[in-house]
Image 1 (cartoon, rainbow, N blue to C red):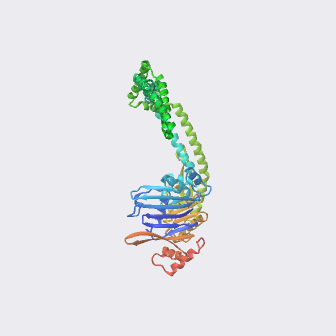
Image 2: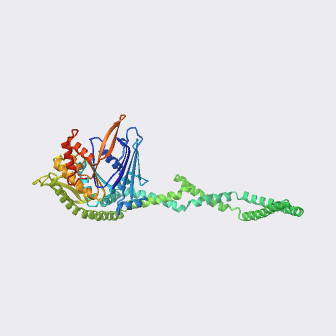
Image 3: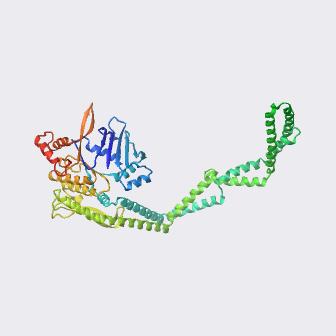
Length: 556
């Protein structure tokens, strides 16, 4: 459930830190005091779209933090683990920061994330039903989504949509391949010729460095041989060679060292120099043995370099880039092969359709019983919402070809009174009827939802009297098994809550801000009396409010 909500510089909220309780909680207050703003802030933390207008005037950024209990043994724990996000404390902390320019940043348990990830996490944590949710239910896609959420098929519905997109993509590729067969064939022929040219060159990047080194050595072989001979002469073969001079010096140092041992270090240095000079002689001789004038090999190397350079110049790349270009062309050839192989594309299309159809059939198997159950539950709820004799039905209409939404269309149909025929929900004439039916749908669908927190933002607009009391009882029953938050203007609804907050708007120094007051029993009576009687609160109104609060289903 939602444990804590921290809001800073959001719309008219300066700073709030709210600790939430379990059960059914009512958020009440004057119109415009900021009740719905609290839920808007929570929605932002759950991944709703952000814009600069949410930042409090004169502030640099809005900052919202929502802390939830991690649902036990649910898919969210697995999702967090796969994303590399720790939740060892059993807490899910969502944070959203929106700057004055409209740019937003997100964190999940301290790990940077995206708004899409927040929405994914939020779907496992809370359901928010907005003020105009019943209007959204007029759309076919919203009706289908509600049924899929009710039957636990939300993830499967996404899989069905993705599989359908892949099937259609392959079908389009096949159609395009048949249409563009000539152009693709010419493109493949050109690639085949280019690839053949590079493959016949048989060149790799390592060879280029070796060729350049060998060409330099062969081209300067004469001067290298001459130089080696000169070095050997200076080291050992001339009359005043380095090795002979070092040998004589070493003899002289040895003689002097017998008289004065202080020359020991000098002797070691001279001896080391003589040894290194001797090693240098052997190294130069080995080097000289491999030097030879080889004009034939030099010609071969230079012709090889020229061939490689010509191909690289032709395709406007460096010689070192030729192997990478060959790999790229081979990949393009494979892609063209896939695009032009109608037989292979047909096989892939058939397989994709089979995968979509199998998933769609599993989704249909979930929808059918859920549609009947939801129809019965909402029909029953309508009887207590001043719609006696009314009926509700979730109709699953098979689609011959199917679609991204599955093998059937989902349509909500309703008869508001006894004897009236079932009609599409979108054609219900009365706004009041639509409000009541929409509320029943939302409450009944939420009752079996997998999330622990259900939020209703003024969904009771357009009802009153006994219907409002019935709605309060329905929400109170929901609150027995999960956390329910409801923004309401109706005393009959608020009286059924387990706890109640009052949201008030204050002006100080020309700035407007919202505050939240946790109401005790006495304060709740006053707030309910205000909701019943407006500004003129009498003792009679207070007694009525107290009676409502202590009635069946109340919080005290």
